[in-house]
Image 1 (tube, rainbow, N blue to C red):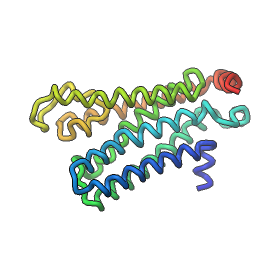
Image 2: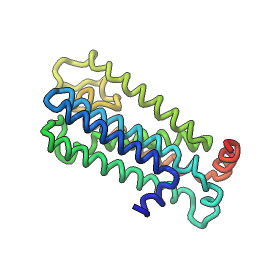
Image 3: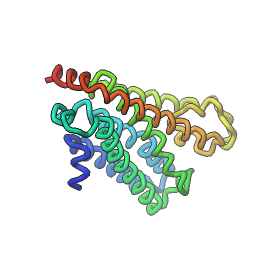
Length: 230
């Protein structure tokens, strides 16, 4: 636990809120589990709730570090520091996702995707929103930029759920329009393009994280932004 706090300094409250959000939604699943809405709630938690929350935390991993001057003065390069913090954050998110999947199975709520692939319900949007928040925050060195961007993209992702009305009535038929929806598990989990959709967004998220590791090399921008906000 001490090592985890060291990896995410100053972000303890945000991580606690992510945990409480997950537990709260799972509590609602317990109340709703006789109903079909329980499955949709679990998918909303895995595909949007936790990934967006992780993105909000990721926005402040470097851009709003309270000891940024000291951090940038040590021998370890900033990209390595950011990579370690992102790994800790995504690892914690993965733990939450696995626990949610196990709890869902224990409660008897059947998800449309099972086995190892069920982790992709969470992994693809988690990489996407974490990458968006990281790049958004580091572009100008401001945490609020990353938070605003990830919340905006999350809202737009919800709007893509309306694409379902343009898809074939057969849920197992391919829908090209739904292929680009970040929340495809909520939209069309049995679509033949589902796996390709997950790999697409996971790849985009990974590319954004790599871009963030490149942006964090500009230490002067981070320090200048931190001093401006003081």
